Length: 604
Image (cartoon, rainbow, N blue to C red; front, side, top):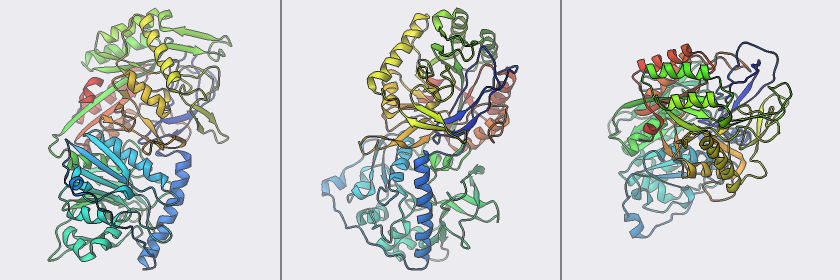
Protein backbone atom coordinates (compact mmCIF):
# COMPACT_ATOMS: atom_id res chain seq x y z
CA UNK A 1 0.00 0.00 0.00
CA UNK A 2 1.32 3.41 -0.89
CA UNK A 3 2.27 6.02 1.62
CA UNK A 4 3.35 9.67 1.49
CA UNK A 5 5.83 11.13 3.94
CA UNK A 6 5.83 14.68 5.31
CA UNK A 7 7.27 17.35 3.06
CA UNK A 8 9.17 20.46 4.11
CA UNK A 9 7.31 22.20 1.29
CA UNK A 10 3.68 21.15 1.53
CA UNK A 11 1.97 20.46 -1.77
CA UNK A 12 -1.45 19.61 -3.07
CA UNK A 13 -1.48 16.02 -4.28
CA UNK A 14 -3.81 14.19 -6.66
CA UNK A 15 -3.57 10.41 -6.71
CA UNK A 16 -4.58 7.35 -8.65
CA UNK A 17 -4.56 4.21 -6.57
CA UNK A 18 -4.73 0.57 -7.54
CA UNK A 19 -4.14 -2.43 -5.33
CA UNK A 20 -1.11 -4.52 -6.13
CA UNK A 21 -2.12 -7.33 -4.09
CA UNK A 22 -4.73 -9.05 -1.15
CA UNK A 23 -4.85 -8.92 0.39
CA UNK A 24 -2.98 -6.57 -0.97
CA UNK A 25 -1.08 -6.57 -1.40
CA UNK A 26 0.31 -3.11 -1.92
CA UNK A 27 -1.44 -0.08 -3.25
CA UNK A 28 0.12 2.02 -5.96
CA UNK A 29 -0.69 5.56 -6.96
CA UNK A 30 0.33 8.55 -9.01
CA UNK A 31 0.24 12.24 -8.26
CA UNK A 32 1.22 15.71 -9.43
CA UNK A 33 1.92 18.97 -7.60
CA UNK A 34 -0.75 21.62 -8.13
CA UNK A 35 0.00 24.32 -5.58
CA UNK A 36 0.49 24.86 -1.89
CA UNK A 37 -1.98 23.93 0.83
CA UNK A 38 -1.76 24.06 4.58
CA UNK A 39 -0.79 20.42 4.99
CA UNK A 40 0.24 17.44 2.87
CA UNK A 41 -2.23 14.81 1.83
CA UNK A 42 -1.63 11.15 2.58
CA UNK A 43 -2.16 9.11 -0.55
CA UNK A 44 -3.21 5.72 0.74
CA UNK A 45 -6.27 3.80 -0.34
CA UNK A 46 -7.43 0.31 -1.11
CA UNK A 47 -8.88 -0.86 -4.37
CA UNK A 48 -10.22 -4.44 -4.40
CA UNK A 49 -7.76 -5.98 -6.85
CA UNK A 50 -5.32 -8.59 -5.62
CA UNK A 51 -3.85 -9.90 -8.87
CA UNK A 52 -1.33 -8.36 -11.24
CA UNK A 53 -2.69 -6.92 -14.53
CA UNK A 54 -1.50 -10.01 -16.43
CA UNK A 55 -3.08 -12.36 -13.92
CA UNK A 56 -6.29 -10.31 -13.97
CA UNK A 57 -6.46 -10.87 -17.74
CA UNK A 58 -5.95 -14.58 -17.13
CA UNK A 59 -8.76 -14.48 -14.59
CA UNK A 60 -11.17 -12.75 -16.97
CA UNK A 61 -10.58 -15.42 -19.60
CA UNK A 62 -10.81 -18.22 -17.05
CA UNK A 63 -14.12 -16.86 -15.74
CA UNK A 64 -15.60 -16.83 -19.23
CA UNK A 65 -14.42 -20.39 -19.82
CA UNK A 66 -15.79 -21.52 -16.44
CA UNK A 67 -19.27 -20.22 -17.13
CA UNK A 68 -19.27 -21.82 -20.57
CA UNK A 69 -18.19 -25.18 -19.15
CA UNK A 70 -20.76 -24.97 -16.36
CA UNK A 71 -23.53 -24.41 -18.92
CA UNK A 72 -22.37 -27.44 -20.87
CA UNK A 73 -22.33 -29.52 -17.69
CA UNK A 74 -25.88 -28.43 -16.87
CA UNK A 75 -26.93 -29.47 -20.36
CA UNK A 76 -25.18 -32.85 -19.99
CA UNK A 77 -22.78 -32.06 -22.84
CA UNK A 78 -19.46 -31.68 -21.00
CA UNK A 79 -17.30 -34.73 -21.62
CA UNK A 80 -14.74 -35.58 -18.95
CA UNK A 81 -11.54 -37.55 -19.38
CA UNK A 82 -10.53 -38.99 -16.00
CA UNK A 83 -7.04 -39.06 -14.51
CA UNK A 84 -5.53 -42.49 -13.77
CA UNK A 85 -5.49 -43.90 -10.25
CA UNK A 86 -2.08 -43.49 -8.59
CA UNK A 87 -1.21 -45.64 -5.58
CA UNK A 88 1.36 -44.73 -2.94
CA UNK A 89 3.49 -47.23 -1.02
CA UNK A 90 1.71 -48.51 2.09
CA UNK A 91 4.34 -47.01 4.40
CA UNK A 92 3.78 -43.54 2.97
CA UNK A 93 0.03 -43.83 3.28
CA UNK A 94 0.35 -44.78 6.94
CA UNK A 95 2.75 -41.97 7.89
CA UNK A 96 1.45 -39.72 10.67
CA UNK A 97 1.79 -35.93 10.57
CA UNK A 98 4.34 -34.31 12.86
CA UNK A 99 2.69 -31.40 14.64
CA UNK A 100 0.12 -29.24 12.89
CA UNK A 101 0.52 -29.53 9.14
CA UNK A 102 -1.43 -28.55 6.06
CA UNK A 103 -1.47 -30.01 2.57
CA UNK A 104 -2.40 -27.47 -0.11
CA UNK A 105 -3.31 -28.97 -3.49
CA UNK A 106 -3.81 -26.77 -6.52
CA UNK A 107 -4.66 -26.96 -10.20
CA UNK A 108 -2.00 -26.01 -12.73
CA UNK A 109 -3.47 -27.58 -15.87
CA UNK A 110 -5.21 -25.83 -18.73
CA UNK A 111 -4.59 -22.45 -20.38
CA UNK A 112 -5.08 -20.54 -17.11
CA UNK A 113 -3.39 -23.02 -14.80
CA UNK A 114 -0.94 -20.35 -13.66
CA UNK A 115 -3.71 -18.90 -11.48
CA UNK A 116 -3.69 -22.04 -9.35
CA UNK A 117 -0.19 -21.41 -8.04
CA UNK A 118 -1.10 -17.85 -7.06
CA UNK A 119 -4.10 -19.05 -5.06
CA UNK A 120 -2.01 -21.83 -3.55
CA UNK A 121 0.58 -19.32 -2.32
CA UNK A 122 -2.15 -17.25 -0.70
CA UNK A 123 -3.55 -20.36 0.99
CA UNK A 124 -0.13 -21.63 2.05
CA UNK A 125 0.69 -18.25 3.59
CA UNK A 126 -2.44 -18.32 5.73
CA UNK A 127 -1.88 -21.95 6.70
CA UNK A 128 1.64 -20.93 7.71
CA UNK A 129 0.08 -19.29 10.77
CA UNK A 130 -0.68 -22.74 12.18
CA UNK A 131 2.32 -24.92 11.36
CA UNK A 132 4.13 -26.50 8.44
CA UNK A 133 2.70 -26.36 4.92
CA UNK A 134 3.24 -28.55 1.87
CA UNK A 135 1.91 -27.19 -1.43
CA UNK A 136 1.89 -29.17 -4.66
CA UNK A 137 -0.14 -29.58 -7.85
CA UNK A 138 -3.12 -31.86 -7.28
CA UNK A 139 -1.83 -34.02 -10.15
CA UNK A 140 1.09 -35.01 -7.89
CA UNK A 141 -1.23 -36.44 -5.25
CA UNK A 142 -0.68 -40.08 -4.28
CA UNK A 143 -2.97 -42.40 -2.38
CA UNK A 144 -3.07 -41.95 1.38
CA UNK A 145 -1.48 -38.51 1.37
CA UNK A 146 -4.37 -36.78 3.14
CA UNK A 147 -3.71 -38.90 6.23
CA UNK A 148 -0.18 -37.53 6.53
CA UNK A 149 -1.46 -34.03 7.34
CA UNK A 150 -3.67 -32.41 9.92
CA UNK A 151 -5.88 -31.01 7.14
CA UNK A 152 -6.00 -30.67 3.35
CA UNK A 153 -7.13 -27.77 1.18
CA UNK A 154 -7.87 -28.30 -2.52
CA UNK A 155 -8.13 -25.21 -4.74
CA UNK A 156 -10.30 -25.96 -7.75
CA UNK A 157 -9.35 -23.16 -10.13
CA UNK A 158 -9.32 -25.14 -13.40
CA UNK A 159 -12.71 -26.35 -14.57
CA UNK A 160 -11.99 -29.83 -15.92
CA UNK A 161 -13.94 -31.14 -18.87
CA UNK A 162 -14.09 -30.75 -22.61
CA UNK A 163 -10.58 -30.15 -23.94
CA UNK A 164 -9.06 -30.16 -20.41
CA UNK A 165 -8.74 -33.68 -19.00
CA UNK A 166 -9.34 -34.11 -15.28
CA UNK A 167 -5.96 -33.72 -13.56
CA UNK A 168 -7.29 -34.73 -10.14
CA UNK A 169 -6.15 -38.29 -9.40
CA UNK A 170 -8.94 -40.72 -8.58
CA UNK A 171 -7.01 -41.49 -5.40
CA UNK A 172 -7.69 -38.00 -4.09
CA UNK A 173 -11.42 -38.28 -4.73
CA UNK A 174 -11.49 -41.60 -2.88
CA UNK A 175 -9.27 -40.44 -0.01
CA UNK A 176 -11.22 -37.21 0.51
CA UNK A 177 -14.33 -39.32 1.00
CA UNK A 178 -12.71 -41.97 3.21
CA UNK A 179 -10.50 -39.87 5.51
CA UNK A 180 -11.62 -38.58 8.88
CA UNK A 181 -9.26 -35.62 8.58
CA UNK A 182 -10.67 -32.23 7.52
CA UNK A 183 -10.77 -31.51 3.79
CA UNK A 184 -11.59 -28.01 2.53
CA UNK A 185 -12.64 -27.87 -1.12
CA UNK A 186 -12.77 -24.50 -2.87
CA UNK A 187 -14.40 -23.86 -6.23
CA UNK A 188 -14.48 -26.24 -9.16
CA UNK A 189 -14.64 -30.00 -9.70
CA UNK A 190 -16.50 -31.10 -6.58
CA UNK A 191 -19.07 -32.61 -9.00
CA UNK A 192 -16.29 -34.74 -10.47
CA UNK A 193 -15.56 -36.10 -7.00
CA UNK A 194 -19.22 -37.06 -6.64
CA UNK A 195 -19.10 -38.80 -10.00
CA UNK A 196 -15.88 -40.63 -9.10
CA UNK A 197 -17.00 -41.94 -5.70
CA UNK A 198 -20.62 -42.43 -6.66
CA UNK A 199 -23.25 -39.72 -6.55
CA UNK A 200 -25.46 -41.68 -4.18
CA UNK A 201 -22.58 -42.36 -1.79
CA UNK A 202 -21.57 -38.67 -1.88
CA UNK A 203 -25.12 -37.53 -1.14
CA UNK A 204 -25.53 -39.99 1.71
CA UNK A 205 -22.31 -38.86 3.39
CA UNK A 206 -22.48 -35.12 2.74
CA UNK A 207 -26.17 -34.31 2.27
CA UNK A 208 -25.90 -32.37 -0.98
CA UNK A 209 -25.59 -33.05 -4.69
CA UNK A 210 -22.73 -31.28 -6.52
CA UNK A 211 -23.83 -32.76 -9.85
CA UNK A 212 -26.97 -30.63 -9.61
CA UNK A 213 -25.19 -27.50 -8.35
CA UNK A 214 -24.22 -24.66 -10.68
CA UNK A 215 -22.69 -21.18 -10.68
CA UNK A 216 -25.60 -19.57 -12.48
CA UNK A 217 -29.16 -19.21 -11.25
CA UNK A 218 -31.78 -18.12 -13.72
CA UNK A 219 -29.17 -17.88 -16.47
CA UNK A 220 -26.88 -15.45 -14.64
CA UNK A 221 -24.27 -15.38 -11.89
CA UNK A 222 -26.28 -12.49 -10.50
CA UNK A 223 -24.96 -9.66 -8.36
CA UNK A 224 -23.67 -11.31 -5.21
CA UNK A 225 -22.09 -8.45 -3.29
CA UNK A 226 -22.35 -9.54 0.32
CA UNK A 227 -21.38 -12.56 2.40
CA UNK A 228 -22.61 -12.96 5.97
CA UNK A 229 -20.53 -14.95 8.45
CA UNK A 230 -20.95 -15.14 12.21
CA UNK A 231 -23.44 -12.30 11.93
CA UNK A 232 -20.86 -10.07 10.20
CA UNK A 233 -21.67 -8.59 6.81
CA UNK A 234 -18.63 -8.87 4.55
CA UNK A 235 -18.17 -7.33 1.14
CA UNK A 236 -17.78 -9.00 -2.24
CA UNK A 237 -16.80 -6.51 -4.92
CA UNK A 238 -16.14 -8.07 -8.33
CA UNK A 239 -15.74 -5.90 -11.45
CA UNK A 240 -18.09 -6.49 -14.36
CA UNK A 241 -16.89 -9.32 -16.57
CA UNK A 242 -14.70 -10.82 -13.83
CA UNK A 243 -17.38 -12.57 -11.77
CA UNK A 244 -17.35 -16.35 -12.06
CA UNK A 245 -20.23 -16.64 -9.63
CA UNK A 246 -20.70 -18.63 -6.43
CA UNK A 247 -21.76 -22.26 -6.69
CA UNK A 248 -25.34 -22.79 -5.53
CA UNK A 249 -25.23 -26.15 -3.68
CA UNK A 250 -28.20 -28.45 -4.05
CA UNK A 251 -28.73 -29.26 -0.37
CA UNK A 252 -30.85 -32.35 0.22
CA UNK A 253 -33.36 -32.99 2.99
CA UNK A 254 -35.19 -36.02 4.21
CA UNK A 255 -34.33 -39.47 5.54
CA UNK A 256 -30.87 -40.76 4.71
CA UNK A 257 -29.25 -37.36 4.28
CA UNK A 258 -27.10 -35.79 7.02
CA UNK A 259 -27.57 -32.20 8.06
CA UNK A 260 -25.50 -29.62 6.16
CA UNK A 261 -24.24 -26.65 8.16
CA UNK A 262 -24.48 -23.36 6.29
CA UNK A 263 -21.35 -21.58 7.49
CA UNK A 264 -21.67 -18.41 5.43
CA UNK A 265 -24.43 -16.97 3.26
CA UNK A 266 -24.12 -15.10 -0.04
CA UNK A 267 -26.65 -12.40 -0.86
CA UNK A 268 -27.55 -11.02 -4.27
CA UNK A 269 -27.66 -7.23 -4.05
CA UNK A 270 -30.20 -6.96 -6.87
CA UNK A 271 -32.67 -9.77 -6.23
CA UNK A 272 -32.07 -10.18 -2.51
CA UNK A 273 -31.72 -13.93 -2.99
CA UNK A 274 -29.65 -15.76 -0.36
CA UNK A 275 -27.72 -18.97 -0.89
CA UNK A 276 -24.86 -20.74 0.91
CA UNK A 277 -21.35 -19.41 0.33
CA UNK A 278 -19.67 -22.02 2.54
CA UNK A 279 -21.09 -25.28 3.89
CA UNK A 280 -19.85 -28.19 5.99
CA UNK A 281 -20.88 -31.80 6.53
CA UNK A 282 -18.87 -34.71 7.85
CA UNK A 283 -15.18 -34.03 7.11
CA UNK A 284 -15.83 -31.79 4.09
CA UNK A 285 -15.96 -27.99 4.11
CA UNK A 286 -16.91 -26.49 0.74
CA UNK A 287 -16.49 -22.85 -0.38
CA UNK A 288 -18.43 -21.89 -3.50
CA UNK A 289 -15.73 -19.68 -5.03
CA UNK A 290 -12.07 -18.75 -4.87
CA UNK A 291 -11.88 -15.96 -2.25
CA UNK A 292 -8.54 -14.42 -3.30
CA UNK A 293 -9.15 -12.74 -6.66
CA UNK A 294 -10.62 -9.45 -5.40
CA UNK A 295 -10.26 -8.44 -1.79
CA UNK A 296 -10.54 -5.49 0.55
CA UNK A 297 -10.20 -5.00 4.30
CA UNK A 298 -13.80 -6.09 4.91
CA UNK A 299 -13.94 -8.81 2.29
CA UNK A 300 -15.40 -12.34 2.37
CA UNK A 301 -11.85 -13.73 2.36
CA UNK A 302 -12.18 -13.20 6.12
CA UNK A 303 -14.45 -16.27 6.18
CA UNK A 304 -11.70 -18.54 4.86
CA UNK A 305 -9.13 -16.95 7.15
CA UNK A 306 -11.25 -17.98 10.12
CA UNK A 307 -12.39 -21.38 8.84
CA UNK A 308 -8.75 -22.49 8.77
CA UNK A 309 -8.91 -22.51 12.58
CA UNK A 310 -11.62 -25.20 12.41
CA UNK A 311 -9.33 -27.41 10.34
CA UNK A 312 -5.95 -26.67 11.90
CA UNK A 313 -6.49 -25.28 15.41
CA UNK A 314 -10.09 -25.88 16.52
CA UNK A 315 -9.33 -25.32 20.21
CA UNK A 316 -8.19 -21.72 19.62
CA UNK A 317 -9.75 -19.30 22.07
CA UNK A 318 -11.36 -16.02 21.03
CA UNK A 319 -8.84 -13.18 21.14
CA UNK A 320 -8.82 -9.79 19.38
CA UNK A 321 -5.72 -7.61 19.33
CA UNK A 322 -5.00 -4.30 17.60
CA UNK A 323 -1.84 -2.57 16.46
CA UNK A 324 -0.97 0.90 15.18
CA UNK A 325 2.21 2.10 13.55
CA UNK A 326 3.32 5.63 12.67
CA UNK A 327 4.34 5.80 9.04
CA UNK A 328 6.97 7.43 6.81
CA UNK A 329 9.05 9.17 9.47
CA UNK A 330 12.15 10.53 7.72
CA UNK A 331 14.87 13.00 8.80
CA UNK A 332 12.55 15.71 7.39
CA UNK A 333 9.73 14.96 9.82
CA UNK A 334 8.38 17.72 12.08
CA UNK A 335 9.50 17.08 15.69
CA UNK A 336 6.48 18.85 17.16
CA UNK A 337 4.10 16.64 15.23
CA UNK A 338 5.92 13.53 16.39
CA UNK A 339 5.78 14.72 20.00
CA UNK A 340 2.03 15.41 19.85
CA UNK A 341 1.23 11.91 18.58
CA UNK A 342 3.68 10.28 21.00
CA UNK A 343 2.20 12.10 23.99
CA UNK A 344 -1.30 10.96 23.10
CA UNK A 345 -0.28 7.31 22.66
CA UNK A 346 1.66 7.43 25.92
CA UNK A 347 -1.35 8.89 27.75
CA UNK A 348 -3.40 5.89 26.59
CA UNK A 349 -0.64 3.35 27.38
CA UNK A 350 -0.72 2.15 23.79
CA UNK A 351 2.39 0.41 22.45
CA UNK A 352 3.07 1.21 18.79
CA UNK A 353 5.56 0.97 15.96
CA UNK A 354 7.45 3.79 14.27
CA UNK A 355 8.42 3.24 10.65
CA UNK A 356 11.58 5.26 10.07
CA UNK A 357 13.46 6.00 6.83
CA UNK A 358 17.11 6.71 7.79
CA UNK A 359 18.07 8.83 4.74
CA UNK A 360 15.96 11.49 3.02
CA UNK A 361 16.77 12.25 -0.62
CA UNK A 362 15.38 14.84 -3.01
CA UNK A 363 17.91 14.48 -5.85
CA UNK A 364 16.30 17.07 -8.14
CA UNK A 365 15.24 19.55 -5.49
CA UNK A 366 11.56 18.90 -6.14
CA UNK A 367 10.65 20.21 -2.69
CA UNK A 368 13.75 22.39 -2.19
CA UNK A 369 13.53 25.12 -4.87
CA UNK A 370 15.42 23.01 -7.38
CA UNK A 371 18.40 22.40 -5.09
CA UNK A 372 19.20 18.69 -4.52
CA UNK A 373 18.94 17.70 -0.87
CA UNK A 374 20.08 14.74 1.22
CA UNK A 375 19.50 14.56 4.98
CA UNK A 376 20.50 11.67 7.23
CA UNK A 377 19.17 10.93 10.68
CA UNK A 378 22.54 11.93 12.12
CA UNK A 379 21.99 15.37 10.55
CA UNK A 380 18.53 15.69 12.12
CA UNK A 381 19.16 15.69 15.90
CA UNK A 382 15.76 17.13 16.75
CA UNK A 383 14.02 14.29 14.92
CA UNK A 384 16.31 11.73 16.55
CA UNK A 385 15.55 13.20 19.96
CA UNK A 386 11.83 12.67 19.36
CA UNK A 387 12.44 9.13 18.15
CA UNK A 388 14.36 8.38 21.34
CA UNK A 389 11.54 9.92 23.36
CA UNK A 390 9.10 7.60 21.57
CA UNK A 391 11.27 4.56 22.21
CA UNK A 392 11.36 5.40 25.89
CA UNK A 393 7.58 5.67 25.99
CA UNK A 394 6.12 2.61 24.30
CA UNK A 395 7.35 2.70 20.70
CA UNK A 396 9.21 0.00 18.78
CA UNK A 397 11.65 1.06 16.06
CA UNK A 398 10.98 -0.32 12.58
CA UNK A 399 13.01 0.08 9.38
CA UNK A 400 11.11 1.47 6.39
CA UNK A 401 13.69 1.07 3.66
CA UNK A 402 16.99 2.92 3.19
CA UNK A 403 15.92 5.96 1.13
CA UNK A 404 12.36 5.00 0.07
CA UNK A 405 13.21 6.08 -3.49
CA UNK A 406 15.39 4.93 -6.38
CA UNK A 407 18.41 6.97 -7.47
CA UNK A 408 17.55 10.05 -9.50
CA UNK A 409 14.79 8.34 -11.48
CA UNK A 410 11.13 9.22 -11.41
CA UNK A 411 10.04 5.90 -9.98
CA UNK A 412 7.40 6.72 -10.88
CA UNK A 413 7.00 10.31 -9.67
CA UNK A 414 9.94 12.50 -8.71
CA UNK A 415 12.74 10.55 -7.03
CA UNK A 416 11.88 11.90 -3.57
CA UNK A 417 11.96 9.85 -0.37
CA UNK A 418 8.52 8.61 0.59
CA UNK A 419 7.05 9.32 -2.83
CA UNK A 420 8.80 6.66 -4.89
CA UNK A 421 9.47 2.93 -4.85
CA UNK A 422 12.87 1.75 -3.70
CA UNK A 423 12.97 -1.96 -4.57
CA UNK A 424 10.73 -2.06 -7.66
CA UNK A 425 10.54 -0.05 -10.88
CA UNK A 426 7.27 1.57 -11.90
CA UNK A 427 5.80 4.09 -14.34
CA UNK A 428 2.57 6.02 -14.71
CA UNK A 429 0.47 5.09 -17.76
CA UNK A 430 -1.71 7.34 -19.88
CA UNK A 431 -4.70 6.59 -17.67
CA UNK A 432 -2.77 7.86 -14.63
CA UNK A 433 -2.31 4.40 -13.17
CA UNK A 434 0.94 3.17 -11.71
CA UNK A 435 2.23 0.10 -13.53
CA UNK A 436 4.81 -2.09 -11.87
CA UNK A 437 7.62 -2.89 -14.30
CA UNK A 438 9.53 -5.38 -12.18
CA UNK A 439 12.67 -5.29 -10.04
CA UNK A 440 15.55 -2.95 -10.97
CA UNK A 441 18.14 -4.39 -13.35
CA UNK A 442 20.65 -4.66 -10.50
CA UNK A 443 18.25 -6.49 -8.20
CA UNK A 444 20.01 -9.34 -6.40
CA UNK A 445 20.68 -10.66 -2.94
CA UNK A 446 23.88 -8.57 -2.78
CA UNK A 447 22.13 -5.37 -3.93
CA UNK A 448 19.21 -5.71 -1.51
CA UNK A 449 21.56 -6.57 1.35
CA UNK A 450 23.71 -3.51 0.61
CA UNK A 451 20.71 -1.23 1.02
CA UNK A 452 19.72 -2.92 4.27
CA UNK A 453 23.30 -2.62 5.53
CA UNK A 454 23.42 1.07 4.68
CA UNK A 455 20.07 1.62 6.37
CA UNK A 456 21.29 -0.05 9.56
CA UNK A 457 24.44 2.06 9.45
CA UNK A 458 22.25 5.16 9.25
CA UNK A 459 20.43 4.21 12.44
CA UNK A 460 23.68 3.41 14.22
CA UNK A 461 25.28 6.72 13.18
CA UNK A 462 22.33 8.54 14.77
CA UNK A 463 22.73 6.64 18.04
CA UNK A 464 19.57 4.60 17.53
CA UNK A 465 19.27 0.86 18.12
CA UNK A 466 18.84 -1.67 15.37
CA UNK A 467 15.20 -1.67 14.25
CA UNK A 468 13.28 -4.73 15.32
CA UNK A 469 11.15 -5.10 12.19
CA UNK A 470 11.08 -4.18 8.51
CA UNK A 471 8.40 -2.64 6.25
CA UNK A 472 9.13 -2.53 2.50
CA UNK A 473 8.64 0.91 0.88
CA UNK A 474 5.29 0.83 -0.93
CA UNK A 475 5.26 -2.89 -0.03
CA UNK A 476 6.71 -3.85 -3.44
CA UNK A 477 9.88 -5.90 -3.86
CA UNK A 478 11.12 -9.04 -5.57
CA UNK A 479 11.03 -12.49 -4.01
CA UNK A 480 14.80 -12.18 -3.61
CA UNK A 481 14.44 -8.91 -1.70
CA UNK A 482 11.73 -10.20 0.63
CA UNK A 483 13.99 -13.09 1.57
CA UNK A 484 16.86 -10.70 2.30
CA UNK A 485 14.65 -8.62 4.56
CA UNK A 486 13.58 -11.78 6.37
CA UNK A 487 17.23 -12.71 6.97
CA UNK A 488 17.98 -9.34 8.59
CA UNK A 489 14.89 -8.87 10.75
CA UNK A 490 12.81 -11.19 12.86
CA UNK A 491 9.71 -10.26 10.86
CA UNK A 492 8.32 -8.03 8.16
CA UNK A 493 5.22 -5.99 9.04
CA UNK A 494 3.43 -5.28 5.77
CA UNK A 495 1.51 -6.53 2.79
CA UNK A 496 3.47 -8.49 0.19
CA UNK A 497 3.63 -9.64 -3.41
CA UNK A 498 3.95 -13.33 -4.27
CA UNK A 499 5.19 -14.24 -7.73
CA UNK A 500 4.33 -17.08 -10.05
CA UNK A 501 7.12 -19.68 -10.08
CA UNK A 502 7.79 -19.49 -6.35
CA UNK A 503 6.21 -22.84 -5.46
CA UNK A 504 7.65 -24.68 -8.44
CA UNK A 505 11.18 -23.44 -7.82
CA UNK A 506 11.34 -21.80 -11.22
CA UNK A 507 12.31 -18.26 -12.15
CA UNK A 508 9.71 -15.91 -10.62
CA UNK A 509 7.44 -14.25 -13.18
CA UNK A 510 7.37 -10.63 -12.01
CA UNK A 511 4.45 -9.96 -14.33
CA UNK A 512 2.22 -12.49 -12.58
CA UNK A 513 1.72 -12.11 -8.86
CA UNK A 514 -0.86 -12.04 -6.13
CA UNK A 515 -0.80 -9.51 -3.34
CA UNK A 516 -1.95 -10.37 0.15
CA UNK A 517 -2.50 -8.98 3.61
CA UNK A 518 -3.08 -11.05 6.70
CA UNK A 519 -5.29 -10.98 9.81
CA UNK A 520 -2.62 -12.75 11.86
CA UNK A 521 1.10 -13.47 11.72
CA UNK A 522 2.17 -16.02 9.10
CA UNK A 523 5.26 -17.86 7.90
CA UNK A 524 4.99 -17.19 4.18
CA UNK A 525 6.18 -19.10 1.12
CA UNK A 526 9.41 -17.09 1.16
CA UNK A 527 10.17 -18.61 4.55
CA UNK A 528 9.79 -15.25 6.31
CA UNK A 529 7.54 -14.18 9.17
CA UNK A 530 5.04 -11.50 8.16
CA UNK A 531 3.06 -9.53 10.72
CA UNK A 532 -0.34 -8.16 9.79
CA UNK A 533 -1.42 -4.82 8.40
CA UNK A 534 -4.99 -5.46 7.33
CA UNK A 535 -7.27 -2.47 7.82
CA UNK A 536 -5.41 0.32 6.01
CA UNK A 537 -5.01 3.92 7.12
CA UNK A 538 -6.70 7.25 7.70
CA UNK A 539 -7.09 9.40 4.55
CA UNK A 540 -9.44 12.39 4.78
CA UNK A 541 -9.47 13.44 1.12
CA UNK A 542 -11.20 11.86 -1.85
CA UNK A 543 -9.06 11.37 -4.92
CA UNK A 544 -9.02 9.38 -8.11
CA UNK A 545 -12.54 8.03 -7.62
CA UNK A 546 -11.54 6.73 -4.22
CA UNK A 547 -13.62 8.01 -1.33
CA UNK A 548 -12.02 9.34 1.85
CA UNK A 549 -11.13 6.81 4.49
CA UNK A 550 -12.20 8.17 7.84
CA UNK A 551 -11.91 6.70 11.34
CA UNK A 552 -15.39 5.20 10.90
CA UNK A 553 -14.15 3.24 7.88
CA UNK A 554 -11.17 1.82 9.76
CA UNK A 555 -13.43 0.92 12.66
CA UNK A 556 -15.85 -0.81 10.28
CA UNK A 557 -13.00 -2.89 8.86
CA UNK A 558 -11.91 -3.78 12.39
CA UNK A 559 -15.48 -4.84 13.13
CA UNK A 560 -15.55 -7.12 10.09
CA UNK A 561 -12.29 -8.72 11.22
CA UNK A 562 -13.87 -9.69 14.54
CA UNK A 563 -15.06 -12.71 12.56
CA UNK A 564 -11.50 -14.06 12.77
CA UNK A 565 -11.47 -15.72 16.19
CA UNK A 566 -7.82 -14.86 16.90
CA UNK A 567 -7.36 -11.96 14.53
CA UNK A 568 -5.67 -8.58 14.54
CA UNK A 569 -6.86 -5.12 13.48
CA UNK A 570 -3.62 -3.50 12.31
CA UNK A 571 -3.44 -0.04 10.74
CA UNK A 572 -1.02 2.83 10.23
CA UNK A 573 -1.20 6.58 10.67
CA UNK A 574 0.85 9.44 9.28
CA UNK A 575 1.99 11.67 12.15
CA UNK A 576 1.60 14.86 10.11
CA UNK A 577 -2.16 14.49 10.61
CA UNK A 578 -3.79 15.85 13.78
CA UNK A 579 -4.18 13.68 16.86
CA UNK A 580 -7.99 13.75 16.81
CA UNK A 581 -8.60 11.25 13.95
CA UNK A 582 -6.10 8.84 15.50
CA UNK A 583 -7.88 9.18 18.84
CA UNK A 584 -11.25 8.50 17.23
CA UNK A 585 -9.90 5.42 15.47
CA UNK A 586 -8.26 3.98 18.56
CA UNK A 587 -11.28 4.61 20.77
CA UNK A 588 -13.59 3.01 18.20
CA UNK A 589 -11.41 -0.08 17.85
CA UNK A 590 -11.11 -0.41 21.62
CA UNK A 591 -14.90 -0.20 21.92
CA UNK A 592 -15.18 -3.27 19.69
CA UNK A 593 -13.24 -5.26 22.28
CA UNK A 594 -9.75 -5.11 20.80
CA UNK A 595 -6.66 -4.77 23.00
CA UNK A 596 -3.73 -2.78 21.61
CA UNK A 597 -0.39 -4.57 21.69
CA UNK A 598 3.14 -4.03 20.43
CA UNK A 599 4.46 -5.54 17.20
CA UNK A 600 6.42 -8.29 18.96
CA UNK A 601 3.17 -9.52 20.52
CA UNK A 602 1.72 -10.09 17.04
CA UNK A 603 4.12 -13.00 16.53
CA UNK A 604 2.45 -14.94 19.34
